[in-house]
Image (cartoon, rainbow, N blue to C red; front, side, top):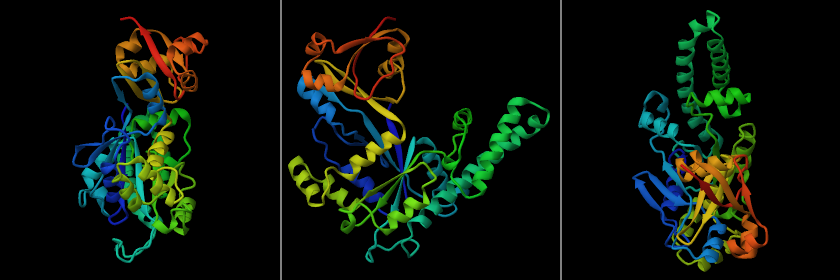
Length: 366
């Protein structure tokens, strides 16, 4: 279940620096590489100290972390919704991603000229928002046109769709992103089918200068936080310039010392990745054996058969039971056998809700 995140932003806000930092990031082990699968798509492993703990305890032949794909979505200009610049391609790329990282310039530097000649992150945000809202309006209007006649004849399903679409249209015409619209659970599930852009979860990566790193904020960031407070979005301050330096470091000790100089315990990229998981309600479970230790990504709230299906559909179809050890117990007792002897290995059935960090083995029959 590879998570795909699109990175968007106007020219000279730090978007390309951030993406390049990801592409140059040195993993803690040669087993965890970054690779580029297309010119504008990079795959990087999700940092998780639990995977390293399990590797030390199990000593497997290989370790496979879960990964996240970052898509550098280029080509946005005013008028993208009407096909200006690379607009159509830009919008098609955004439609494919699970979440959006919107990079906003929150630093002052006379040597880096802003495309609009001023530093105003909220206005930058609104440029992109407007293009996405216009595209969503186009989709909504077409759907309204499709169901309007049926709705007038009394068709209940068409009337439900028509009312929902009108609700979406009204919100968009007010210049608001759909992620800020309150929807009932049933409505939210139905809206997913429309593949709208402004409903996607978003992280605002506020690109700050080196002087603001220790504080983790500045006046620009605070203005952004106020502007997006109704969007159910995350605001993550990050310094793309510093991240590019961290990404070049091979030695973990050198990296730790560098972070310490700025009063940091981890890189901004790590926080960004973890935030994306949190935003999308994703968790990780593990399988651990002599052949491999592996991390698997699932949705929070999934039951054991669904989790098994991520490994192989046959595991879900033929699910019988799951053997589950909590990570903390595995770390404390050092082995599967010790956990079993201590009564810390539980046999769970189809209704078991998988917890973050569970170490699991599935029994199945097909």
